[in-house]
Length: 354
Image (cartoon, rainbow, N blue to C red):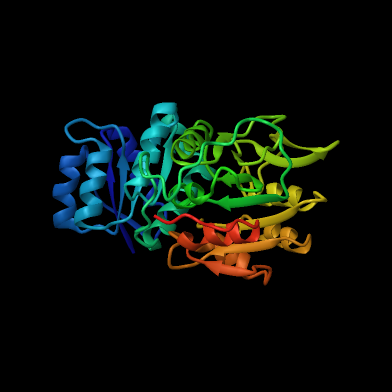
């Protein structure tokens, strides 16, 4: 039985989340709390297995509360976030500080009663309850590793490699440990799928860009892949890379969800696998589910090199495990060694450490 403490300043959200979680016979909401101070007092006496935590609360906000929970109790925490740009920024900050995952708080709370949303909430709680406490230190602004090189300018320049990365739960933290290791003059362009809603992917791209030597942006329809640039698929859009004339172009669409997801790693990687004339590297990072399993197979079958994050450094080993099960993964590495392996494959003579 997973014992959950629900923390939210809205009595209605507390009630709805409790009803949803207790609809599953493996979850028990042992209590609720209306703010961070109330939550910390109850955690000490009730000893829950997991906490759902609202970000914006009076008396003690979610970020402050999260820091106390992580430092004192090392409990898995799922943040409940508003679907706004500010909410996205705060959520990413919470993930930096050790939250395992997040759930968007719908503007219409009654949508929480929809079956697909209920199932998503229950599944995320079950996965998070088993997740490992994340000790990976993401690189933050002012902590760039090694040599700092000026970012690559937005000019077309030939490159030999396409790097395709996919991730989900634990991904923002993993990406923030990995992407800053890559130098601006890397002989590659990078495409990334991180399962996140709209606005959140833009905030993630901006945050990664601020701490990385390469340029990182949220992908837009018609973007041309450039050397030393990384493109993150926008929330709610599938991303494909297609070769048009002598350029690689990003195409976005809102075709039906796959495995309940949009964007998907599979669609992105399968499109990269079809491109001729480039070396390809496929990377599957931490995440729940099996998205990327088909995509990584297609990268390998196209002659590409494939990497999976190891279980020890993955918050959730679902996606890497599914990729490894295909027997199409060339090497399994901890997150801190993936950057050096990528650099060795693209012909760089040095890496970055932190």
